[in-house]
Structure formats: C-alpha cells, structure tokens
Length: 308
Image (cartoon, rainbow, N blue to C red; front, side):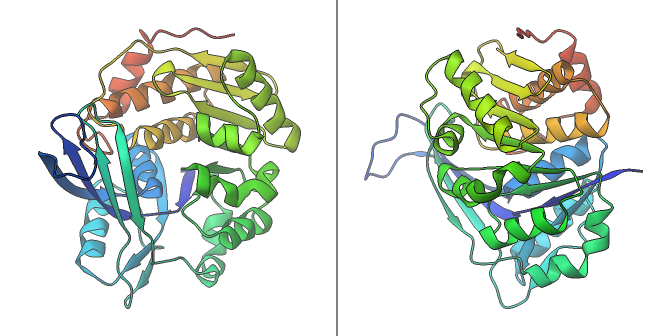
C-alpha cells in the first residue's frame, strides 16, 4: 500500500480559551486544555483517521510528554518508529491563547528539540519510497533545503505554518510540488497584498512561475483558492461559528494529501480539503476525533462549491 511520510513537528498543545473578549495584560477567565499537537503530527493523525497509511518523523524529547504523544499516535494508526528521540531534550510545547470566538490571539512555541539531518540520512530509503513527502516549516531551513535536494524526484508538499517560518523556503520554494499557505503567508512570499480575487490569481500565477506545481491559499472564513497549471478552484463555504481555529489548516493539508494519494480530481480535492477544515473548526480539539472518511465523503456531496 502506498504511504505518505510526514516530516515535521510533534508537540504538546496547551490551549487557553477566554470565556469573554480578551483583556490584554490581565487575567481572563476561561478554560485550559492539554493535548497532543504539532502541525506535522496533526496532519498525520488526520490522514490516519481517513485510512491512509502514514509514517511520522518528528523530534521528541526523553520525557513523559513524548511517551504520551507516541501512545496517542500509535492508537490512531500512525507509524512512529522513525521518530527521533533525544533523551536529553524536552518535547516541544505549543501554547495558544484563543479569544471567545475560538480565534487565536497569540501563541508561543518552545521548539528546542530539533531533527538532525543524520537521522533523515539513516532512513533515506523509507522516505524515498513514499508516494508523498509532506513537510512543515517547523523544520530548520537547512533540513528543508536538504530534503528537497536529496529527494527531488519525490512529490514533496509543504505547509508554511506562519509568515516568519514561511521565509525558510523562499530560496527554494519552486522545488516543492504543492505549497499550502494562508493569505498572510502567501502575501509575504509573493511580495504582494492580497485584497481581492485578482490578487489571489496573480499570487497563484507567481508561485507557478517559480516552479511550484500546485498552490493552495487559505482565505479563512472566505474559503480557499486552489490553483495548478490546468485548474483554478474557488471554494466559498457557508458561514459557521468556529469553536476552535487551531488545527483547521492542518486538516486542510491532510485533505489535499489524501485526495492526491487517491488520485482525486482538483475540484473534488478542494471540496474534500475544505470540508476537513470545516469539521475541524467545529471541534474543541486540533484534530477532530469524530472525523471519518465516510462522513467527509457524504458532506462533499452537499458542499457549496463555486469554482472558476
């Protein structure tokens, strides 16, 4: 069976959500939860819940958080035997503060545990045999550059995560098959403001001109823009009230990768990925534990899609 190898971050998520509008520099009543997270790990879990065969390569510390993360990954069917364990390090931790609407107000990431290139070299054959290599930009720039160079014959996807971290791939962005980003990240990498539909079209053309084969730009509540050389898709979903925005982009990326693995067409891929994100927005967790392939497929039949 074909498989996807996800190389990126796995961490413990601490999510604090205010009951009311956040008052800066003050104590805000709310709720705090702790759960397994990390962009790479979240994407891998979503893929596993869809039934895809997925291997996760992520750096972890030699602590209790690492054991909790690995047990959780194993429970949903991820292959974690290629993760890198640094017994002297602390497992990465992500702390997010959400407002009463579930939108992130601020976040801090402790990412002191890193993945060495030597670990990738030691598992090169496993990575080489992947149908898709999926990266996140929590990886160091030299690691990202190494992977796109050594595995240039593979189909490599990247999730840019944030404006700051997206800068890591600027020198070699054209070597990725698929780049998924949000509006701010796309604006920064394309060096242009994205204020209307024409701007998104121009940004898409720009990334394709660099060598990227497929571009997905999340537009938040306005949906997403999907573009490759042959197809352009605008997904404009119905309005919803999100419970938690953490993880929606990860679910979107998982949907894109899953449909690629299954050889789905572009319009269906955009619809499927958008539905993955929508279902995640309606969950308290970064990965909606109730997501199933059957449910997403059923919802895709009635999804509101407007494409050009």
